[in-house]
Image (cartoon, rainbow, N blue to C red; front, side, top):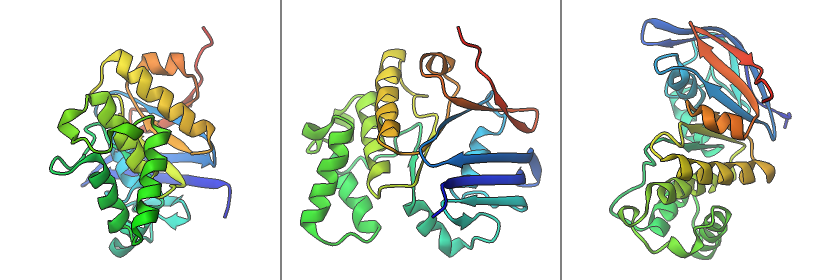
Length: 227
């Protein structure tokens, strides 16, 4: 497997008939942590959706975790998503089951069968986000920050080659955002590759890393000034 987990070459991204981002060139290597920033409506979400198969890439070239985004078929998308961990702004936890139940649901849906292995894997990912004692609770019994930690744990279940975090702190207060960011930083230090869309500039200053910006239909790298 190549060290490149994501590569776009002259990729033009459309939402319906309207062109959102033009001629995007971007490469991500294993172990990178990259921010994707830009105003609301600048194309961050469309960029992310193209990466996990919600929008088709029709112009240019693109590959992600060894899948070709241009030639990928509908039936390939579930297999692509097994190699990705996706963290959304609104957690997307199933309200009618416990945290353990949420995580078990994902593992079973992706082909895990053995109860012991399922339990061990759930314990491992909850431990990584410091939520090991909360598995018996229901989502509504947890704070927003705790729910987002669970969402990160869920993204880690299948040991993804790339984590796509789409505004993971968008619904959280500043203090909780920092806590969630610390979790993402730790996971990255452990070798996980993360692309994080955000408009929380305070986090960028606190945890500087390579940053891409969507603006006026373009995506370009911005160099953060050292304060």
